[in-house]
Length: 264
Image (spheres, rainbow, N blue to C red):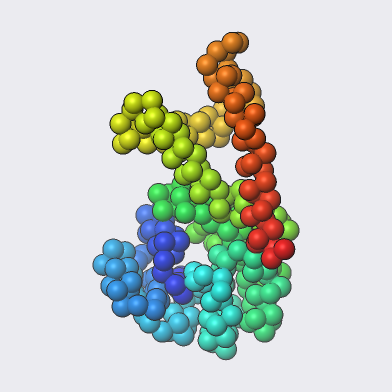
């Protein structure tokens, strides 16, 4: 099996690292393209994969092709490669807002397509990816793709009508969490804690809280209640967050993200 990447930014790099780390295939069976020689030199040195400035070369030398360019470049890239994409080849999209029907129309029909939405924590092996496929992708094909996507975190199959929701709840949400961590650290600094230490305390608290949700299986509200002693400090902080519209702000931000993805 050979895997090609058109585009080699942060997300492609994360996927490639996961594939190599989990020994799905060797680096010598991966080829990636980029516009600049500086990017290609970095990727080749860091990952040991083959590189090219030619998208056609990448397409012709891959069994699975990952379109890892920004969404606005998809029409241009697909126009370049569609005539050399083979019927047995699997094409993976990581672009928000680009539906399977839209992708199929761009390619001219008959292409095995898997639409995905990964996120940047894939860079540290803790990504969350939603995936769906079209009717041309066989069960065997899809199992292979899920194995690849699982190499850099967790992956779940979702219906395509939830893919835009996936963008808001996982694709974009790391940015929300970074703002939360920054705000928590700012609060600690305001009360005298050194900044570097404040970031560590805040980030570790977010990490630990997330693991509590995932590993205990308990409802987040139940876990929150366990921290809130009657008349205590935590419930007072929660009261202020609710007063300031914390929960509603998060929900409205996510709904705005979905609207943007849908072009509304």
